[in-house]
Length: 380
Image 1: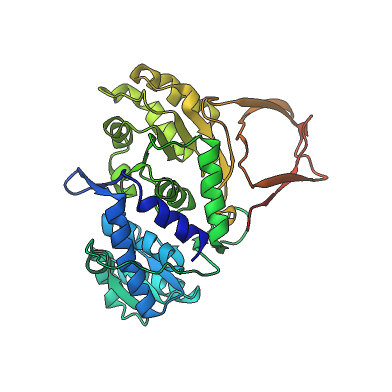
Image 2: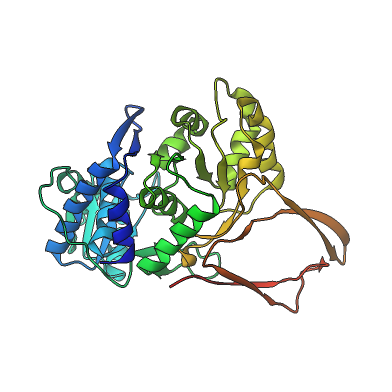
């Protein structure tokens, strides 16, 4: 068995915590013990074994069954690829064809989906094995599953910020090292509660979920669409869950901070770690989030601007919780003159991650600093 599958199995079968999933239609949360999630995931893994697939695709909302397919793929030893649904206004038939082609191009043999997503994929007449996760990921299980092993755990699409978008192949040991490195940096404990609306097709969203699963803590997971429809719901979910951990891109902190005067009846005092990643950090906007929400018990020191990339599994540098937004002021000199800029310090490399700077002849006008290309080496 892979080290990642073994870690997931050990955690999910012994944890007394729950996965808590948000239904956007009913606006309600449903609790599912991690132990029951393991039974569901075993059924998914068994189906993958019957299909003989070495790579698995997942499309859909983060329902109980949808999340079980993610866990099941990892338990089976197959490589996991999660792709997004169609964007609003897009041609749904074209999306289905493109999604199936993307899966086929990276070697996916089995796809799990549900609801409207599944209907669209079925109409595209796929050559891949296509399953309804509601049917497969049930919680009835009477026998134990032999955990699988494979060379790759996650097939993660990249954003293309460092070049052409591509698919990063992450080994089980590399994924587990990243999850453990992040957990160690933030001093994760059994009493922590995570709350996220990040999409599972993004490395930050998948890592948040898997960190909680591997370490057996309570995780509240909402669909990204629910946040998009009502961004203020995020801080209400944090209040309801009494979350100690959350993560979001810079734009979310900026939006909530800007319009925070509309907010009432919140309690953010339990929150000790709020990761800001995935986008360049706007220091002023992020700091405003901390200042404005302090009246609801939020500790600005919980704000944690961080750096990561899909090619490294996710997290690269993360600050120790409690530091807040640490600023570094630089001087940029051009032909037009000099100006001061403030940048957020993104913490230190997590355990196992190596980071170095390859100097560049072009310092971009930045005075008194080393400037160059960042090179990263992650555990394999």
